[in-house]
Length: 394
Image (cartoon, rainbow, N blue to C red; front, top):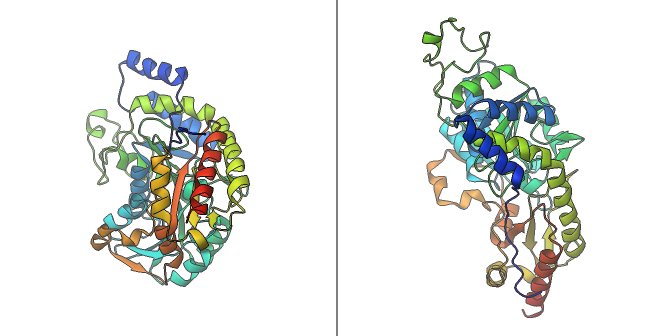
């Protein structure tokens, strides 16, 4: 087993992706165009959603979700309104909330699933609560049925950061489609890889049209003639440079759209193989007395494999991580640990509801290793052996 290299992520491209890129080069159209539009339609159809908006990253997808809600007349968001978020997530779950003058309300996560704890959500609701931003962490669905009940009871909007959980399912519905809006990422380390890229799914026509405008400078050029934002004149000279929302320039490349279509065809195989690796991982680690692994909710797409060290191994995280790295096993913190411990927090408008004890434990004693569509039987066994050897020597 010596000298096995266990990567955090590996590329999933083949000849088909290269051919798709070459088609774009031959077309001489590099910016967002027909290949992106085709991929959007395919993606929306695959996930049973009305609308898909491709952008340059999952982070930008989160930004547009918040922006579209802020500028929509239907949802009456205003500065100072509160958004409930889990304390364990990636930075760009939080930044768009702050950038639109909304207040972050951090709550703790469940120790077993690593996802936002519905019991903590209930404690955090106030008259100013407008949004619950649920994050499906490391491929694992949140308790979306319970969260939806909370939202309906309190007239709160549910949106999903699904960037790590492409292909996961809850009650036979794909995650990322269980709220008003859902975001996806196609970065290199994710389930699908389009160089850079992200997607938003929604069934709301007004939010879709706002996202389309916001994605490209805030103009109306890409909107249909009849839309919910601004009536077009019908004169292309005037309509081409008519700006109606304070937008961005976060369009995807045409190459990324072309690659996305190829990768989407492979997605069922990607998820199936990731789940096979997860079965091996669970068989080795789920009964370890000094390690807690992520408890699957419904059907996870297993972005990676988390390990929370406890009992005898608690407080030995850094020593173990050093051993793993020395033996060519790449590992990372569980997303960003307890995000409120990051120095950037001083720039954010936020409130912490309750004690973040589980998030603190994850921050101190947690890490994760990668998953892949390739067979990782040898790598996972290698990881297990190194951890057991370490355990014997402490």
